[in-house]
Length: 265
Image 1: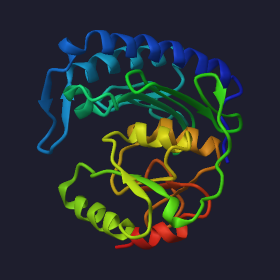
Image 2: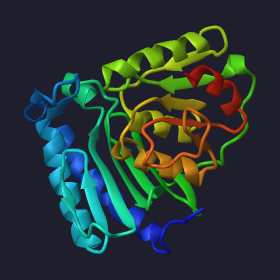
Image 3: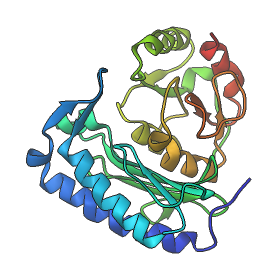
Image 4: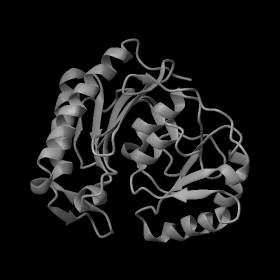
């Protein structure tokens, strides 16, 4: 397993300062930045805040790491195309929540070596979470070290996070998965933000997260933290996961065999 760079702690400290500054502005200017427009032909939206945040974050990372690729959700691509290191940036994960005044949104940044995320941060100022992690070092909530993933308990105690993906043809798969969970688990949660769901997994608030269609920027930061804590990361067919795959199951040890039954098909 590829580990984070040797100066990972210093990088995370710089990312905390950067995301705190940008996130603070997004909170302060929310009434001005919530203006939204449709994105493509789907149900997704983009706000002025997405673009404000992406401009600030990508510029900073490109200046700090000119030898790395920097890729943002809203289309910013900087740095050498042949770099083995890529920063995947979601400048505002949970855009719909932000635009409606719902506090479950955050900035997600992940550094990947090829397709494997090794270092990440999720800063969710109105949700009250700042999560950092690096493979080989561990993960933290603010300055508090987080414990390694523990095995799953009985099915009836499980809390599973999921969400509808943007492609409408994929949503029936989510509905079938929820039907599978119906008589097995305690609850399922839908937060409207992959970053928040993965942060809650790393924090031990939920036991698993699954979605059938997701992008690298949505998950790179949270998956770096999950990997650092020993959570299992698989595809919906049970194969090895990486950022090149659109589907993910992230869970405590011991849950995958059961959940994969509900994800098949």
